[in-house]
Image (tube, rainbow, N blue to C red; front, side, top):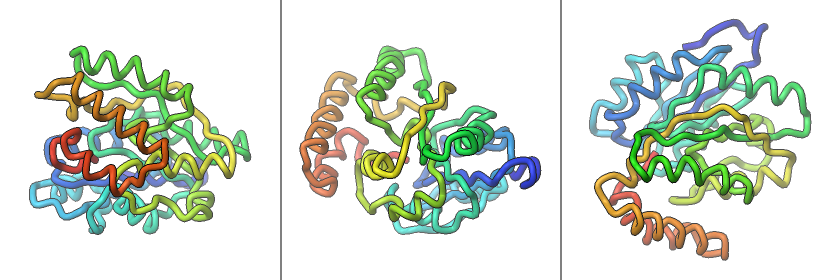
Length: 241
């Protein structure tokens, strides 16, 4: 999946955690295959027993096996990455073709920028997708930056702060909090597209209320490991990569 030459663009490592993602990973990897620039693709699998790993191999991704847990898997992928920049994508999130080029340009143009994220659009035409697409920019204005939005970081800074903590939930907010102590986070005005699956087939109001309560408890200092016990009703009893 590498495109271009290293002389044109420093290498960007795209890291995708997976766990039984055969329904989504093909579409994601096809989109990643259209990303411009010199990239490598690492799928960090947490023990899938479906076709996820086979699909990843068929799409020329480098597959590594990791202990289960999104933060653990992304950190495992980052530890194997060669890129000067790291882009973390969820398995149901597709990046724009210019993603890697924009990341490189941001880092080249501002030495104080240590990371950032993208605009986000939730797929589908339902009220949940439309509401979340409207809501996320508002949350961004409050300084909240979620993994769904494609977090990217300088590899050197990621290493300096120790990378993702092995939290079962809110590993993204924790990473961003520590990154902000090192420099600026830059928001790129192009969108990744992510699935609204966590809200499918259930009461959106109830699911969103639970999600909001968990966010509030985390921001008030409750341990992510404790909050994870409350997370199952929101994620439908499975890890959402």
